[in-house]
Image 1: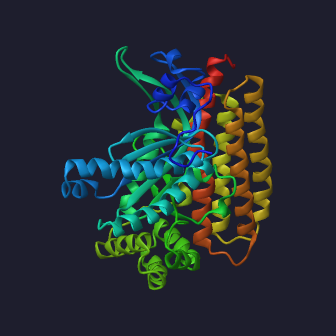
Image 2: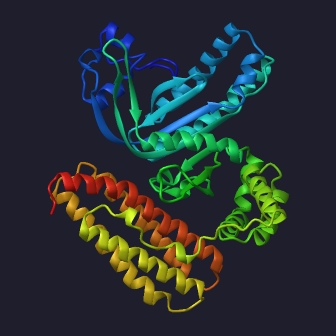
Image 3: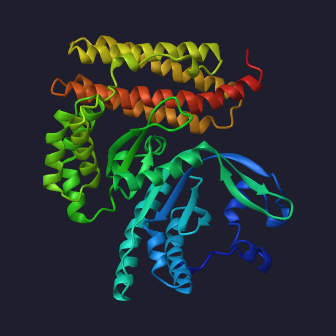
Length: 433
């Protein structure tokens, strides 16, 4: 049985193909529908939903300047060889090495990518122990993960081409990795990955921020996955989850003064909680400079013409859905007890709306119907859980308003402007009236 560092070679693979496989993964060829690398031509491509992982060594430039080039080369290969089998164990494909960085693809479940990221951080602990024994300083890495539709194929020229994936989902995954530096969180996932997980409760996850991304109408939510944190820090974060969540809700709803005490509680329990420290500094800066924070109030929950996918039936349902979300937020904001009078018709409407889209997907043989339907399923799970919270009398009003914004409005607008836009474009090409 091969060990972790040995590639699994198909018995029917020739030596030439096995050698090529070290440069172009065999799984990549399978996704392209090509039996051999000899059958690949420039421009071959296929559209797939994937989870993408980017990782990077922190402070690599300073680290590399302190050693000889030959040592640097040995170090990089040692590190990458350590991480490669971790990706493979979770059904991942390493698309490319970018200097000290890794770009990996997970064509199956989003859980594969997240578990790979967690295990990479855990494997790093053992790797650093070996570095310490050899007299080297330990290294740190940052990981970012996103899930979405990408184009997988070959790019370049006739004399030099390479396999790669391109698309907005790739760029956002890279942004996730970059933001891990800002917040001091080793593993960050996008809301698309978060909502694609089969069981979110199987992981240790905290909401981290809403970030503006160029070319997007709506803020993107990002999350910290802290399963690989050292045990004392992990325990402290678990014990202060409610304080952290409430602090971030207060901050994003425009109340940094009220958020500060909760963040101080988090830091008293875990001084090494870098995201909590980041937000404490953010709150203090806002208060000292008397900066007016933009508030995610119910006035933001409105239809914009940019959301249209040009399928009249679907667009009218989207417009009505946002109106109903605004009505729900208003009822919660006013502390009224008639929430069921709003939730019951909203639940029925959401069910009918998703059925409309799924019927269109079946009628016109939309190739990503399963993936799109899974997004609806995950949304309804989150929605029903939020309904239970709204019905409980002991829930904090500001926290509920923020969760409505985060779980319903943000998700839905991002879903409309990405997944539904893709569906609408397909239906229009298919000749829908």
